[in-house]
Amino acid sequence: MNLSQLYYFKKLAELQHYTRAAKELYIAQPTLSDAISSLEKELGVALFCRDGRSVRLTSNGSEFYRYVSDSLRSLDDGIDAMNRRKEQLGGTINLGATFTVQDDYLPTLLKAYRERFGDEVRIETYQAFTNYLTQSLHNETLDVTFCGRRDHEPDIEYFPVLNRSLELGVRVDHPLADRASVSFDELRDQRLITYRRGTPIGEEVQRLLARSSLEGVEALYDDDITMASALSVDGGLGALMLNSIGLKVFSNITTVPLEGVRPDFYWVYLASSAKHAKTAAVQSFIEFVKGFDAEGAGIDLGYRPERPEGAPPSA
View 1 (tube, rainbow, N blue to C red):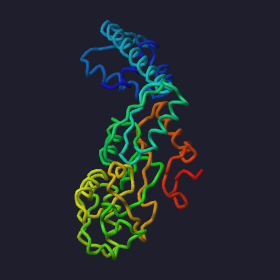
View 2: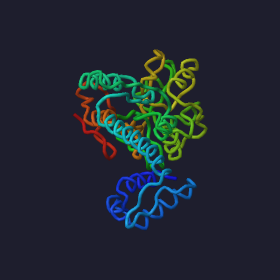
View 3: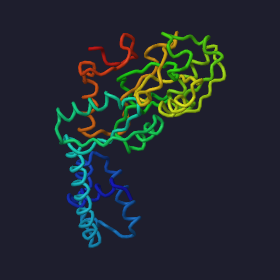
View 4: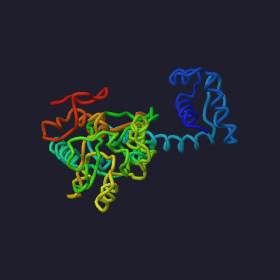
């Protein structure tokens, strides 16, 4: 038994004429006849009996009609309610974000959004790593996220919002701490750590290392905070890491630009599902982010002259 059979039954019960019912249902009459026969076979009772060129409900059919009518009415009411909810600018947006955007970008963005739309929309924010955030989009536990871009994600829509440079992180008493820049050749004899593989930033770093002369870099870390913690207690250690908010927590850590590395090394994107329906609130948030003048609000979006396709222009 399926929903179409129930709608077919209801229409035939009301019109009591196969040809007219099939016409209003926009189906062929044999299709309607087969659907009713299948329904009667599944229920084990006759729902209609012939009455000349028309049909009429049996006693079983009349009783079944009452249940079907009530059920389909409730279902239609539920569909209407969901459509109204979809069109209303209200409700909750479940927003995920990596640590990278939680400096001045995300707080300023959310403040501006609330100033525009007031308290009609509630935004609940969650912090996690890119892989988890992306999976949450697939699972529909999150509506939108700010995260890195994973390879082979055709069902995720990405819009670039900001970038961060990859630099050498060291303690302030490290021999290279005062350098204006440093080359990979100069790092050959250094003890170095970086992000683990399996994450977007980790894979980007590994592709960079594969083109360089560096070997033996320990790829063990998920985030900037953990790496900076390791640096803060080891003056001889260096880290290939993003120059992000995670470093601001540590007063004894500094970064040195890496020669030959693009200043827009790592991009953070607004990500959403291309498959799942979006509420009016979620769609309004996405459009707001795309039009948000972050640089006009004094936010550091990173290096701007060279941008990936779809990146927001400089103010």
